[in-house]
Image (cartoon, rainbow, N blue to C red):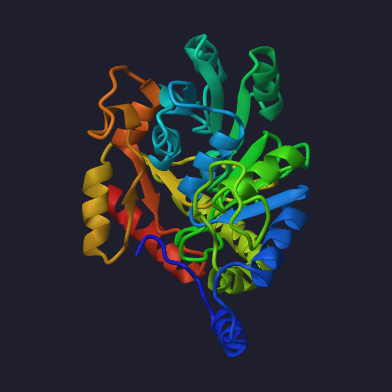
Length: 358
């Protein structure tokens, strides 16, 4: 198995307690508590949770004023949800390549892609990393070109910029995902953080039919139904209590992989600044990727191919060559990455990789 969620008796007990209260299951007090925990942790004014991390990006773009026909710059290396989130309402994702060492958007490529139709850019913090040039360079670029900066921090809960700010908290809106593989999970789910009162109010309306207030059926704007549930919030609250210990373990696992693989020629673990950021997956690059994956499968070790270049996926089929994302699509492999991995299991994986190369 390459990845699996981690739920325990605490989540089960929290769900049972809530069910005994006879609640309506739809979002209410538990959801508010979960939102407050995320806002407190990221040191932001507002957190709004929604049904998944794709919709959270869609709502972020809509709240920021992105419309059908506008161009939104996105990395060509990312989960396909990033471009899909704006394509959903008719905006056009424009793909640019990423930095080889961080897999975050290459700012020079962004500059070259800006046109009169560009309205926003979605900066993806790949595997919790930040761009080499720093978030400040992207802030400045957006200010100079009157662009909205949205942070897709789906993989970055528990990761910080060197200036101490949580990744996702710098742009107009930041987005997290709580899908099954993430460091904390509610099965499905997403969260938006912002320090902008107007944006927060707009987001809450957008996710709740455009209601003028809670519990009524009067609508002064268009909205949709992307609400959370109390059951998810019960799980999320207990997961947030475990976040710090999981951050520690994720960093320990990275160090174990780094030490276990560094002497093996032919394979490279992508570097991570574990002082500030928390790895989500453990990524390696190698020429014999498919052969290694098949070999490890025979040894009962689960792996997963890293994202291929989105512009070349059948769903998009957009012309263009992007050197780094093309390379990742050919050489990138995710090793077993679940937080429950033991030291012995990691040593076994590294030993089997060493045996493959011998």
